[in-house]
Amino acid sequence: MIADSPWVTTHPPSMVDLDSCVTCGLCLPVCPTFRLTGDETASPRGRLAAISAVGENRAVLDERFDEITSFCLQCRACETICPSMVPFGSIMESARSEAVAQLPRRGVRVRRLLLGRALRSPLLLRLVSLLAAFGQRVGALSLLPRVGQVTRGLRRIPLPLPTARGGSWGDVENAVGTERVVLFSGCVADVWFSGVHAATIEVLVAAGYHVDAPANQTCCGALASHSGFGRPAAAMACENIRAFADAPTVVVNVAGCGAHIKQYAAHGEAGADLASRTRDVTEVVADAIEAGRLPVLPQSGRQVAVQDPCHLEHGQRIVDQPRRILEAAGYEIVDVDAGGLCCGAAGLYQVDHPETAAQLGTAKAAKVADAGIDLVASANAGCEMQLRRYLDSGYEILHPIEIYAQAISPRFEGDG
Image (tube, rainbow, N blue to C red):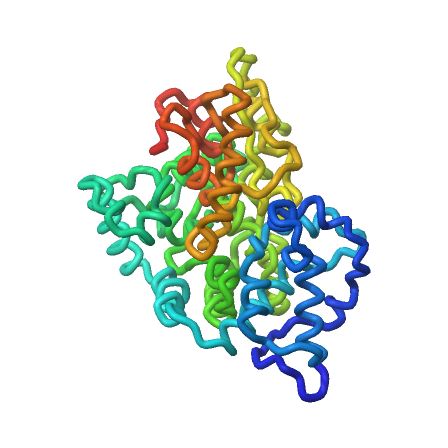
């Protein structure tokens, strides 16, 4: 921070990180919003320039600054291509926190309540999920425009409401060679995507793991952090650091959650330790297949279209493992929109920027439709919902682990 700094939060954008951008322009072709608009301020280097200008007191933090930073999807595609390794994701989260802290706006209190408190409360989550489940069944969700916007594409929520939180699976005492892993159950994913948890547990136990899901874990904090609520997000991180203190390996099956937990190093040594022990489920299962702990099935002749979530491909640099799992399930892999644009889900982006989210969602759905394959693998809950919004009902969209679980265990049926 510099003298008379305009920043007010405890973790403002770092001028050292901002100065590491050499404005080479390699980020431009991979940035979804720049490719849609051609506007320099809708590019990574344009956003960094705006943040630097405010940090150096050459510009003020105003509504225009808010527009520039909030228009970013935070897909982190620019990080993958950046030769200077600018930590763009963390810079944007800090900039969003500054905008929320300094600019009055409608709905901030409601969002802080939902993202900062409701997602941390199992009771409130289950109440919201119960209402959503009934709303699905009577068709009431579509009557509330903003609620319908968020929940459109959501799987049918099963009743009674399931939960993996607090559970334990596998015979740790009698299974030879059993290792313990801990499942990150998350917040809405615990109920809304319970089929993914069920498949994850099924496959991990089949690989010889004992699986626990601590009851005292909470939301990863990604939605709050991306929306500019840095303090609640930090509180969630601290809760998870305590909850997983003795976990040898933390397995995450939502790409956005995994990418965020792997950034917990920002919360000190204990956070860095947890980040180092966190693995996406596709990493764990791909290793188990390679080690011979899980079967490789003969090719079935059926194809599966693979969509790479941004926070798996760019946030965690995981691309090959989902494909190895699907191939082991007997499927032929067909890539859709390889190296393409973000699907436009991006947390609450479809609420704040519905037209841009719809453009990106429509484009991604068109790529899937062009492939002519009715089975789609996507390893992130938000991406799955976005694909469901813009693909017709003839497509089946599942997590790669669900597809593998169905292949090795015909009795398994997810909730997709």
